[in-house]
Length: 266
Image 1 (cartoon, helix red, strand yellow):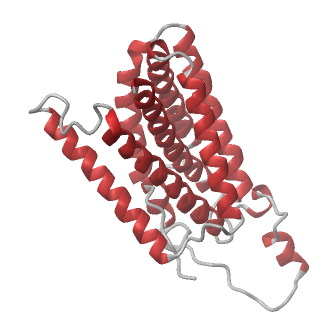
Image 2 (image 1 turned 180 degrees about the vertical axis):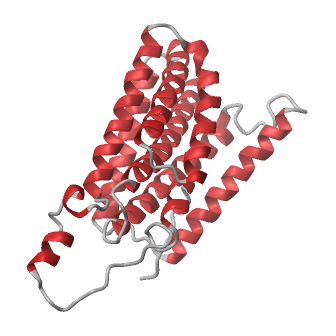
């Protein structure tokens, strides 16, 4: 099957179209069953033993990033620091772009991004909760449900990452991002922009499409990470892969939170 890319810039710029960091290639296949080779590249080998990234690395580090975001988000919530949400959004956006395009694998910087993102999420979540009681718990459950379901479908082979699938997801995602930019620009001239996110059936439909796109981007991320784990990908890139997953999960959470808001308004 042809190699595929994720639309997540944090992953594509670091791992390239082959699934490994730029300059790295697939491990040569051999017909021998050398014990040392099996120990080094076998499925039970750890990153400490091999010096390369594993799927388990990414899972653990993603958990660390999400845990950090939860801690700072909870602090923001309970200390009443909602006013920091917008500044945190700006700082998080800058950090995210720097990490993505500079291919930074420094754990401290990536954990700092997670902490700042947690402040943003904690602040806006508190605002939404104040307006719609119970909506945050529903959004969290929905995010976890979509992410787990997507992972199960991917691992079971129900969703296959083919070149056609990849092109469709990338094209649709770029189209959605372009729509957001146009709506933002229109907002400077007309109150509410294009009226895409003012509530009603149109806004609900757009949110459902965005949630589907976020889920499909998770599939591309899962596939790229799994393939990268089978190649000469240095251990440090596990942090960048975890960062990429977190970016997609945050996007998914925001879209579900917004969808629930529109449904509450109906």
